[in-house]
Amino acid sequence: MGKEKRIEQKLDIDNTLPHQISAPSFKGTGINIQPPFRNEQGVIIGDSHYSSFNSPLENWSEDTDPAIMSGDQWVHPTNDIGWNTAENQELLEEKRKPQAYPFMHPTIDVSKGQD
Image (cartoon, rainbow, N blue to C red; front, side, top):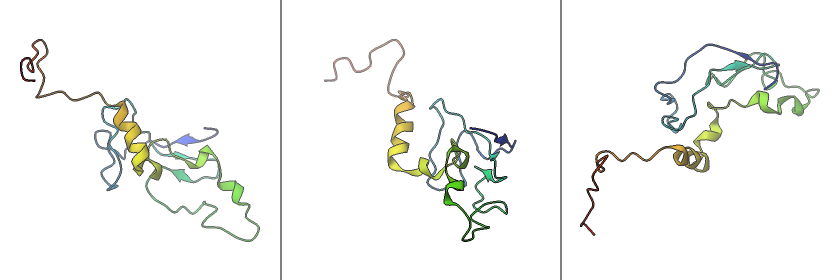
């Protein structure tokens, strides 16, 4: 990211975004939810508010170059709609360690003789 400025605003609860119904949990993935930031255009990215007074979308005209809204400065690393896709949620699942409890014992093979 370039000249973005972080905004200290906590949106998550235990590495989840409960205000978004389809948002995945980042818990156990090693990925921490990042705070919103203000990009070069003065738009806050990642605050879950989808309109901004400074946004080119709110000030669109014939003279607006659509390229002004391209690049990483418009994408939040953890609070982005892209995480809601099945493909990206699978990527998060692959990062989680298997939760063996309550089916495994730390020193005894409890499945011995069961097959």
